[in-house]
Image 1 (cartoon, rainbow, N blue to C red):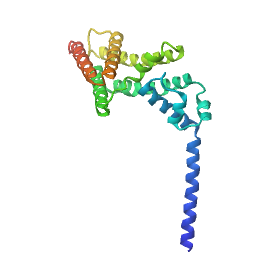
Image 2 (tube, rainbow, N blue to C red):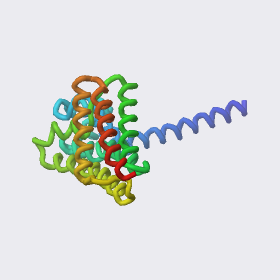
Image 3 (cartoon, helix red, strand yellow):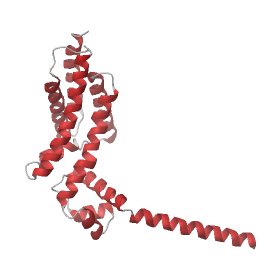
Image 4 (cartoon, rainbow, N blue to C red):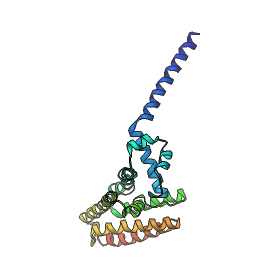
Length: 224
C-alpha cells in the first residue's frame, strides 16, 4: 500500500511539473512569435505573400487573435519579420556559409547547386527561391520590405564577391571582376530557379550549374 501511495504521489508530481512546463511553453512569447513567423514563411513560399491572409496564418500557427495582434498588428510587420528572420537565414545557410567553408568559389557554387538540386529532386516540387519570390511580389508595393529584401541580396552578393576576391588575391583566378561575377551568379541562379518553378523541373538548375562551372573553370584555369 505504501509503495502504491508513493508511486501515485510521484506520478502526480511528475504530472504537475509537466503541466507547468507545458504551460510555460504555450505561454512563451518568443515561441509563439517563432511559430507565427514559421507558419508565415511556409505560406509565403508556397502560395505567395499577397495571397495569404492573416486569418489563415492564425490557423496555421494555432494562435489566438490576441496573440497574433500582439506580435504582428499588421501583415506588413509579419512580412518584414519573415524577410529578416527566415529569408535572410535561408540565404545564409544555403549560400553564405558554404561559400565561407569551401576552399574556392567554383567548388562552393557547384556544391550549392548540387545540394539544392538534390533537395528539390527528393521533394518532387519546386517552390522557387524564397528571396526572389518575395522580391518579385512585394517590392513594387512596400518600400520598407523592398529595402529589407535588397539588404538580403546585398549580403548574398557581398559573400560571393568576397570569395571571388579572395581567389584573386591567392592567384587562383585571373581576369575576373569579383563584383560583376557575383552579380552574374546571383542573376543566373535566380533566373534558373524561376524557370524551374514555372516548369516544375530541375533541368534549368542543372543547365545553369553546368554553364557556370564551364565559365568559372576557364577563369581559374588561366591562373593555374
